[in-house]
Amino acid sequence: MSEDAFNMSIRKFLKEVGVTSQRKIEETVRNGQFGGRKLKVRITLTAEGTGLNHVVEGEIDLP
Image (cartoon, rainbow, N blue to C red; front, side):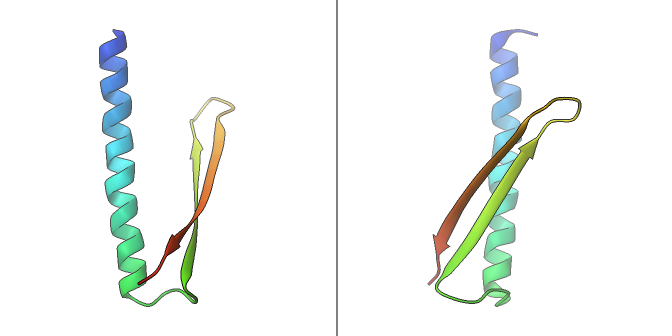
């Protein structure tokens, strides 16, 4: 696999993660499934058959 194809494959995956994650967060906020002024979020990235375990945490300000 070429480096360009590899990078495009990663970008495609990350785009899917970003789009679907945003939809789920918006749905959760619209349905009122939260408490407070900020929504604490966490994403865990793993890859089957590897030791990859990357966690990103943050807060989203609510309207």
